[in-house]
Length: 420
Image 1 (cartoon, rainbow, N blue to C red):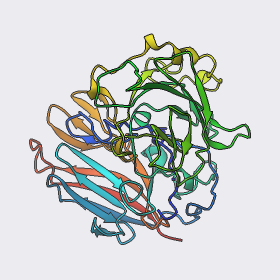
Image 2 (cartoon, rainbow, N blue to C red):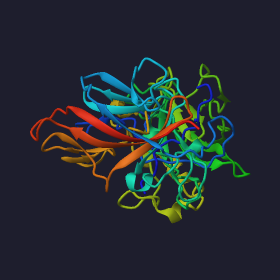
Image 3 (cartoon, rainbow, N blue to C red):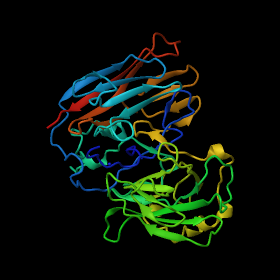
């Protein structure tokens, strides 16, 4: 099973799915672009605390086809699946937005940074698994409530592009840190990689996500000013709120819920942002400096035995051995937070054949093709009102003929779970 990627009024909790800020766009050229970016995703163990709509026993009982024909550059088309009709993107009722950008296509839910609604995304998931769901808020195997496992659209960067955890490795809906080391610069416009008093550069690991009682939403971070690698600081953050970010100043170790305070990094549940780009007014940027050995195999698949053992002590040397870091080659290599959605995964494969989750790109014909059912992926999307859902799959991308490089329409098939 492909893991789901990585909380408005009462917005649902988000599970960061691991999608690259530089690769979130469904790029037609394979160059990527976009958000927070989240990656293959993850959901965390959580209980319904009343801040999200409760699980519903209503099933998928209606169907619809959404054909997008407005493919002009820089255009957006929105769809209200409750009404089974296109809707104004300026209104409050749209549930899915199809945005045709200059060199990419992106999909958005009416949530978070994309809209004021109570929408969210669970996915992408292999269609062979997603088709087994009869209800958008209950796991088909366990009957477990997954209503808190929907992600808002959001801003994010390196922590989504290069995730700090893996999810559900033992079927227990837990997050498992990989103890990666991230560089955090205080001036992403500079190509300096050596810390100074004027321009500190920190290195940071996230080593745990649970408190002593086993409750989620308590990330433990440890960090250094890279000029002083032996002065390691550690702090556990209460990031349990589904609505409020906790902002941390790595210089002082102080934390606050005031976005106007001094901060470099912010936490909400398992989401992580930096103070720059779409996430803040600062100039903070990030870069993956090291992934400790033994966590991933040659195919970049997690090695479960390594993850289920607490590796925080063994990987401290990865944090303090600054000479071994990978470092950005220029200022352009710093990853800045930008808007993204779990509907926009990073591509996989190698040119000329690229896989964007919803579709594939053929670099020889320059056409995009909806994936057949046996390899398709789809998503569960919550409505702007937060009380209905749709299971969505891309069925067709239509061209006038086999030689054309400009599509005439995209067709999405929806199974709709109406409000209960």
